[in-house]
Length: 266
Length: 306
Image (tube, rainbow over all chains, first blue to last red; front, side, top):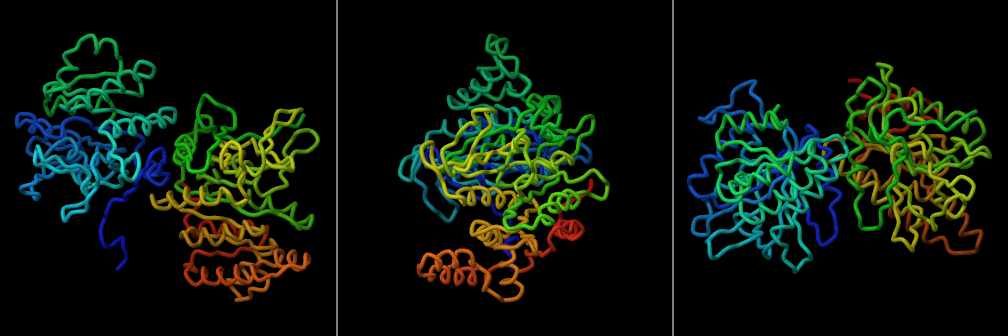
């Protein structure tokens, strides 16, 4: 049996310190439209925001409210950049905690022309478990995060073998990756759904970059998705000062319309 | 007045120069360089989707007769045409060096000039990686970049070039960029690119390029009749005759009265490599035969007209 027949497993690269993986970077040469969609936001959502996140998933994959994909409907094609993890419950690891890092993996089978790339910060010492490679643990929340098995390729960021990364390292590396494409005729979009302080720093960074290049650095904030997304959406001075920031309501049709208008869905 | 040729595809609409990046050991190739392999090729009002292929021209033309030297460039130019007449739309690269004549024009006497010549007539991208083997310098008359201890220049008619160094203060060997560019090609192969190395002539470095490429699953088109280590490889691979492999090194050592055991060890290692290699990756074409080279490229998925 050839390995290709064995399974479609994601490639995994580890970047230590300033080291940059050439082979992970070459994923951007995969055959996909030159559009980078970065998703950021909450991993542990209040119940009222989980449904909205599901609608974001449906919007990206050309599906209706019942989750059915309609032929000919626009869907995402391009390169998806996300946090690369899957959050599992300690008491019952068979239960996946649905959050922002499940959106892009979930749409893979509906979007064959998309490539999903994970960028993971090693915020805890890694452990190998029957449920996958653990990259972070929270006893307080009784949760742990493993590498999401449903992606094309991923890179783990660590300062060194023994040092832990910070949650900010993930989005900073994504900004670095996207920035390299800004002069190459690519398009980019950051989608913000819910999220906490780390998401806020990322959103503000993209927004700040949009001042100099609003046609490239664009941010779509889902208003009504809670926490930081709502705080930023309601900050009129923030919206006014950053021409690359767009809003949409937490509704399937509105998300679909905005994503289409911003070029993410074709 | 004659001027140097230019590529018909530029890296982007705002630049009309040969982009240059300096990369130190341990750093990856910059994304602005690697993204050129998938960039749309815009030529005037026409836009061509990049062919998902990349080919490295490896080797040299030392000891070529005048007839061979005159014939190699036209052969390459004809070999890379496509059935629709538009020509190669992929990426071609080499070691990127050049010789200048007394008028400051690149004299196209080296195989490293093939990418720039192809990029001048076809919508392909010409790139290079060059190891920094001596302190870099700038020619006092023209400001041109000197990249080795013999006054060798960069071919500045390409789309983009990388100089690869150990660090700002130290140089690499002539094979210093081998791992860098082969990893790049291997990565592209992993994401579905057709990859190949065309080897002709060359010494120990070219021999390493041939074997290292094959060990990574990259096809090698070996040009027979191009002399030196490429012909030696063909003799070893096809005929089991290893007497030409490392011959120059053996003769040099023997001439200095030194032991040649290191050459024997090298040959033993290459024999072991050949046992592991997928023999179907190797194509042999006669020197300066554009038709044969064209057929070899087609057989491994290159030159797809869209």
